[in-house]
Length: 117
Image 1 (spheres, one colour):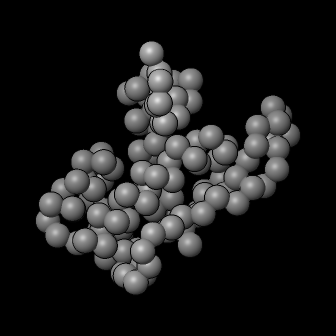
Image 2 (cartoon, one colour):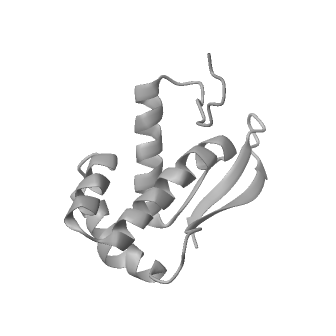
Image 3 (cartoon, rainbow, N blue to C red):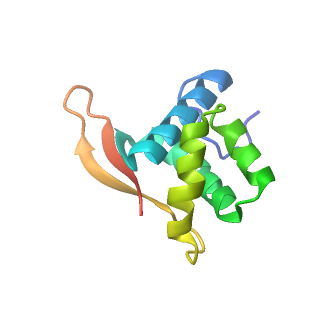
């Protein structure tokens, strides 16, 4: 039973959902802004903020945790720790925002921008 479960399922299996969220987070860290559906953005935002918190900590264990979460992508982890995390040194949280764009023309899914603040 799914009582009190808070995660988004997104009509996918667990492995597919994990890969989807990982790819969304990688793209946000790489481009600093992506356009996606509202449900996917809401699923990816907590993971993105957790990784930025790891990067603010900056130790080796945090770097290894980020590598594991991002699928061993060293270039994205380097950018996260060296360029993105120093921007949020004094900020206690809320590193990403979701801006609504309106419905997609083809299927009327609510589209949003997921971007770093």
